[in-house]
Amino acid sequence: MNTQSNVRLNEDNLHHLPSGISVPNYDRKKVKAGIVHVGVGGFHRSHEAYYTDAYMNQTGDLNWGICGVGLRDADRKMKSILEQQNYLYTLIVKHPDGTIENQVIGCMTDFLMGCDEPNSVIQKMADADTKIVSLTITEGGYNFNPATNEFDFDNPDVIHDLANPFAPRLVFGFLTAALKLRMERGLPPFTVQSCDNIQHNGDVARKMLLAYSRKVDFELAKWIEQEVPFPNAMVDRITPVTTPADINYLASEMGVSDEWPVTCEPFHQWIIEDKFSVGRPQWQKVGAQFVADVTPYENMKIRLLNAGHSVLGILGSIHGFETIDESIQDPIFRQFLQLFMDNEVTPILPPVSGIDLDEYKQTLLIRFANPNIKDHLTRICSESASKLATFLIPTINDNLRQEGDIQCAALVLAAWCYYSDKQTDRHGKEITIIDVMSQQLHVAAAKYAVNPASFLEMTSIFGDLNKNQGFMDVYKKHLKAIYTDPNVKKHMQSIINSTALAVS
Ligand code: CS2
Image (cartoon, rainbow, N blue to C red; front, side, top):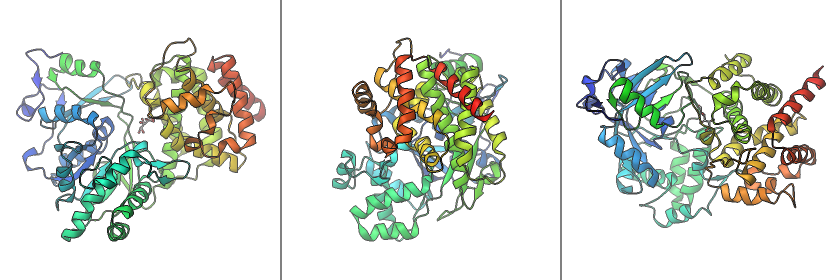
C-alpha cells in the first residue's frame, strides 16, 4: 500500500520520516565502503549490516560501509529496489510480546550485479579501500560435494568460469580474479568472511577457493594460501522471508513506503575468529564476540538450531503446518524436538565455554515459538539437500560412531523421502518445494516401493549412510510406517513413548 501521505524511504526523506522509526545518526555521505558483500538477502540485512550500522552509530567510524553484490539474475530486484531507496531499508524487529522496533539501516553504499558488470565487481573487490569480502551465498554456494567434501569441478558454471576468468558466474571466480589483481598491484589481500551456516565456514571457503584458484594460477593460489585470512564464524538471527504484509504494515501503520524491508527476531549472535588481514570494524562494541576457536559455537548452533528447524520443517510440512511457530505450539512436535536435541545432539556436542546448553535449548524453543515471526516452512525446507547434509547427517554419523541414538533423525530422513516423493502433505495438499535437487530427490524417493533404500543411495547427500545396516533397519521401519500412515505425529509420539520407556 502506498498512500499519498506516506513518506518514501530514501536519502532525501531520511530525516523526515514519521516518528517510531529510528534512523542512522551518522553522515551517510561520508561512509566509505570497506566491505564488499556477496549475497544481499534478508539475513545479511538483518545481521552483518545490522551490526555494522550499529557500530557506525555508536563509534562514528565510517570506513566500513557495505557495497552489496548480487551474482544471479534473481538479485536484480533487490538491486533495483535498494538503488531507488539510496540503499536504505527498514529492519522490523518483532518481539514475542508483540512489541515492534522499526529501524532504518544506512550502512549500504552501493550495489553491483556480477552478471551484468563483472569487471566492476572484480575492480571493487580489488580496490585498496576494500578490506573484507563477506559472503552469504547459502550452503549450496560453496560448490562442494558433501560426500567427498571436495570442490565440484563438474558444475557447468565452474567450467564456464575457468574459460572466462574475467566474466565469472560464481563467487570463487570473482574472488580469484580480484585477488590476482591485488597480488599484481602489490596490495594486501582482503579477508574473506563467510557468514553461512556451514561448519567451519571460513575453512570451507578457503578450501574451495584454493581448489579453484589452483586451476587458474598456481602462484596466485600459493599467495592466497599464505596471505588470505578466512575467519570461521557462527552467525544467528531468525529472518523470515519478507511478505506483502510487512510492506503494508510500514505503509499503513508507520506511514513509510519501503519496497523491501526485512523482519527479524530480536535475538542476534555473531561469534567470529579474530583473523583479519587489513583490519575490521570493532563489531565487539555492538555485541559480536571474537574468540580463538569458533568450532564449539558453530557446532552447537548448526546442530541444534538449524537442524531443529529442519526437523520441524520436514515433519511439520507433512503434517500440514505452515510456519515454525505453529509447529512448535503442538505439544508432540515440541516434545519430539526436545527429545531430538537432548538425546541425539547434546551427547555429541563438545562443551561450549560460557554457554549452558540447557538454557540455550530453552531459548531456542522460545525463539521458535515467537508468534510474530511467521517463519514459513517453505523457507526452512528450501535447499534441504544441502542443509540436511550439513545440519543433520553429521550428527547421525557421530551417533553411529559412538552408538548414540538415531531414532528421531532416522524418522526425519524417512519423512523427507515421503515428502520428496509425494510432494504433498498427509492430506494430499501440494507442498511448495524449493531445491535445486528437487527433481533428483523426487526420482530417487519415488523408487521407494521397489527399493526402500533408493533415497539414501543419493551418496552426494547421505554419504555412506546406506551402507550402515543398523541405521538402515531403523530408517526402513520408519519409512514403512510413514508410507502406511502419513500421520507423522503418531510416529513421533511412538518414538517419544519408547524413549521414555527405555529411560524408566
Ligand atoms: C534456517 C536458518 O534456513 C534455515 O534452515 O535454519 O535460516 C536460520 O533461521 C538461521 O540460521 C538463524 O540464524
